[in-house]
Image 1 (cartoon, rainbow, N blue to C red):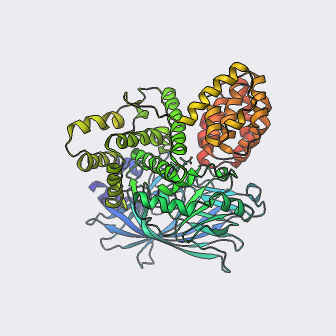
Image 2: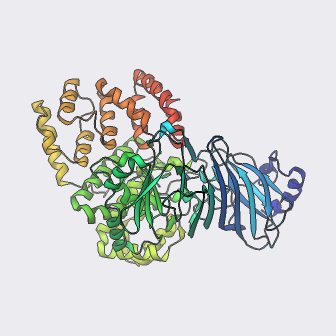
Image 3: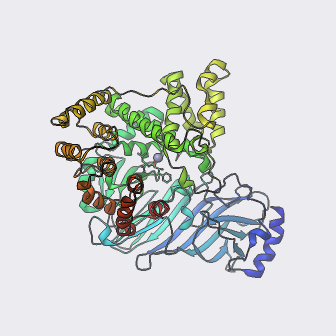
Length: 622
Ligand code: BES
Ligand code: ZN
């Protein structure tokens, strides 16, 4: 590192404002020593503490441009500070009140990671102004034309920064272990409203410029912006929904329990620390179910089923206000600390609000998909470990039921052993003591040892963290959860198949969870007659519930039930949620004809997808 500091000014003098030919070979020769393999930044030398962001949102050019002013903290006199960038056009850099350009260099591009931006600083440098614009294909951003929105009249923009895409729209130290507060001034066309992961406006103003404040320190992956024809409606004093005006009533109905959810979460694990909790329901191309942007969860419209049956997603994103946003995975290799904890917390909220059986059903659905995933990946596959290693890979690949469900079942296993009371006390303490900090898996295990196991060898053996965290597959003593409701469906499943007649079944299998379980436990290939009979009884093909559609279309492909294909095609074209798209395209790809069909549909659908979705599907269908 020291070598870098001496040579860097020279290099920069030679080529200020240009991409260096190969500065990494010359100066950043050794792998960067940061603990985060997915960030170039070196927070031990100099790190950011606050961001002042000024951006203009240009829909014609599909471009953001403006200035990111970072307040920084130096350790000693490092001489430089390093940011992450990916596809950004850096126009100039100024230090503090200087008008003279500062020296900076962009390093070589690395796959997934983009380029390091290193800026030469003085010992007393406090602020760095980076003037920049985004590129057309900035991966975090999705620019929607009016046709891709619910209202069909005005364009829309939204960001998705997790895991390492914040650097495609803001030059930042893009590691979840580095936190900062922020202020932003965002200028948009006057007919549109911008929203951020911050204190938000509830209506449009005359000027088109809006000021945002986030007073709590957050990591960069929680930076978020959405701009569109958006309206607001309150649910209660501190919760509310934002969405396009034509969706507002539906969304308000669906999320009526939001206020209660926050109250319930607080009773479980301590105060909600972020002020307001609102949800923004986006157009259908949003690639995830939800994203826990602080103060303002971003959500897919595919959870608006009309009967409130998919609202556990809100519980999940809300739970991240503790697990993830307060106590944050230190790197993307620690990802299960965000998602496994959140799944656990989500099911606790669901249990409080909707009862034990509801939570149990969700647990069993999770268990079954985890089992299927481990079988598919192979029990000895190193990626089935909770402590996985995504160095040199896209951390996006870590988004799987290993982090979510294996993580969940590890925590549930601890709860089963020590009892709820003790485990809740431990978790309460975990969230309050580590609030606004980051956490590695090993730090968590250390905390488990010192605060829960406390030298009890028997307990340590029973919990067996080693097997859960470091070993692949599922631990031998892993007990499968049982749901009474689902057990009933197991018998019904047998009865109708032997009688060859599902008539009347929909009266007994009526909730969304039950239908999902029923579809997921159908034999792999059913005759067209049976598929037809099921469709007559349940009307699955034309369901308006995206979870059911997702599950049923997979069954349709497996059984070559082509009657469902037009509806499936429409679903694939309209919906951009990767969780639904991938399994359907995957199933289609298993036969040559299916793959052809998939490729045809994909050609039409791809322009509607966010990069997070099309990057995965490109790889699948290539
Ligand atoms: N934080 C995740 C989404 C995410 C993870 C985005 C990793 C990018 C990289 C979010 O909280 C989430 O888990 N969403 C789920 C919802 C669910 C489990 C209820 C989803 O999108 O399906
Ligand atoms: Zn999550």
